[in-house]
Amino acid sequence: MSDESLTGIYEPVKQYKNRFKGEFAQKARDLYEKFVETAGIDEAANAMLVAEIHDLEKKISRLQFFRGFLRLVRNALAAIAVLYIAYRILVCMESCRTWSDVTKDTVGNILIPIAILIGFAALIILVALGIECLSKKITDAEALLKNKIREAWDMMWPLNRQFQWETMNNLIMEVVPVLKIDRIFNRARFAQLYNDYGLEDFGEKCSVSCCQSGTFNGNPFILADVINQDWTLITYSGSRVISYQKLEYYTDSNGHTRSRWVTKYETLTAYKKEWAPAYFHDKMLIYGHDSAPDLKFSREPMGIAGNERKMRKTIKELEEKNRDLEQNFTMMQNQEFDASFYAIDRSDERQFQVLYSILSQQETYNLLKDKEEGYGDDFSFEKRNKINILSSYHMGNIDFSSDPWLVRDYDFKKVKEKYFDYSTEYFRNFYFSFAPLFCIQAYHSPARDYLQNISQKETGEPLASHCEYEALANYMGEKMFKSGDADTKCILKARPLEESGGVENVAVYAKSFSKVERWAYINVTAGNGSSYEVPVRYYEFVPVTKESIVKVCYTGAPDSMVFSDITNGEGWKKLVSGLNVNENTLVYRRGLAAFLASSEKTDN
Image (cartoon, rainbow, N blue to C red; front, side, top):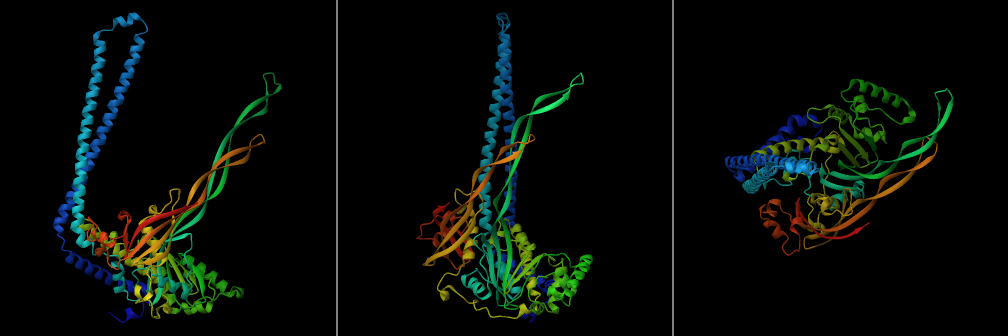
């Protein structure tokens, strides 16, 4: 390994292309081969078992198709029989109008309809028997399929269990040593960002659904997926039909003008706008650094880099701004960088120029232009004194939780495919999320991460921050915490309570809204000049909060040790022995095992 990797990534696009991409791919291959060798999976046997599973799935699909077809036939026969009965009743009623008609009926006229109905009944019974036979075959095939799938999972578990929550992050740290990724986002890391760098908490209307924390050159970062609750205006409408008398004038046949009252009908429509909750995900990278501590600026994707027409126009705009002494704006030496980065709201020109040296300007411009290795100009960048916040379109295209179940499967071929597809895109996405920071030379000055060797014993408390607990609660699923009165999604907020014997109680608050029907009566003017009240139904969203208690066990072990076998869950039983828990609610994530203890109250 060269010394360059230990000092910085000054040319992120070039270094990714020439070094990091290939190095990561090789390490990912080596690790996979090691996993396969350790697992000792019989690939041929797995292929045969998977082929049986696929054959069973096709068989079940065919049987379900034929069963559906027979059900249509049965329903059609029953409908025809009912129509025929109705027809015969009508014929009988018609013939019964006169006594003489009845005397003309013969035995054949009576027996033929009965024979036809018996035939319909026999056909329906035969079809029903066929449906029952197919249903039994489907049930047997589904039971066999379930057993085969379980057998395949058991066969693959020695390989699957080796993919851990830390697998991808460990690979990244091997390839890019300037990045250190924490196992969990601990309280000390949050306190470091909050106290030393001025990080603001995400707020009551936000819930962290996934987070990764660590350091870049010893300075702290958080990569977070945050669920936000905001408000949007909904337009409701209502209508009402009214009538009124209107005097009309007309000319009669003699040419005289006459008048008459005519009833007019008109549909009146009214509209009402009301606020309703809206939810969206926001993925961001938050990085703390002491360089340019008083500087504030923001930029959005502009699509200027590589576009000559936009570039010329923007450079001309910035030159005019540079000449305006009242603007307090100084154009950078690299005009193409300044135009394409377009951070024109920077608060301190001197600190901005210190942050963006000549090399930093050039590499940032190269990053904005590149769409082959990276993603081009797709990122937003906001600096708030010591806090840097980046978000990008490409962040939304990857699940950066590194959940091992993203690559696990009962099919050996699919495991391989999932692993290499996910690891390749995960590294590319992760790397280029940091690339705007890599471009800044000042951010490569190494700092000592005084939290690197932190442990639970040293802090005297469990490690997880409230953000990690929120991610854990979201991983458990909002349905587990949602109030029965809730009609919207939930924002899950977590607050640690007390810890005893390695188990911590965490309060989880599910904040949602209940829809309450309301009516508004809005005056609308009709064609006769009069106003009428038009009813409009709308919904008021009333806050609902449900509090639940989650118990969190600090296992400190990889999940392969937590549940030793996916079919019997012996590891879970050992973990929660002595605790009165519902094992159906128990989940494991990044060294933390959690289960729902109780639901305390609902506040409306």
